[in-house]
Amino acid sequence: MSDAVPPEVEELLTDGRVMAHLATSVDDRPHVAPVWYRYADGTLEVLTGGRKLANLRENPRVAVSVQADVGGRTEWMVALQGTASVVEDEAETREATRRINAKYGADEDAYPENVLVRIDIGSATATRY
Image (cartoon, rainbow, N blue to C red; front, side):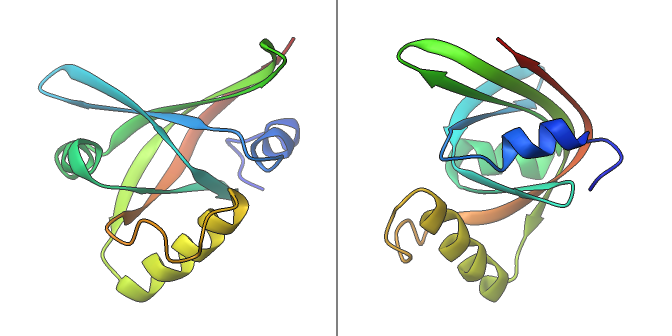
């Protein structure tokens, strides 16, 4: 467990196939987009490309929100802040792709163009509704 992520938040982050929203920023302009993720030991793994990846290369500070809804009603939300690192290792990216795609029920080879990004979480808050 990470000191920045309380056990109750870790439990929420590892539960189910919920979508995360990754917020990046370059030149004081925010960019938010949905991403699939996997959480383990204080680190969030996401696979991404395009504008998000370009932004992360310029400014690694990020925010992530994760929310679980049932029948249109929010059950819980988690807000994270952290620092992203782009992983250039192809073998690590392939392995992360298999883990993340399996979590969301996608083919293990889907989205081969994405790059692995690891987010070290500095702070985490959660709310249950």
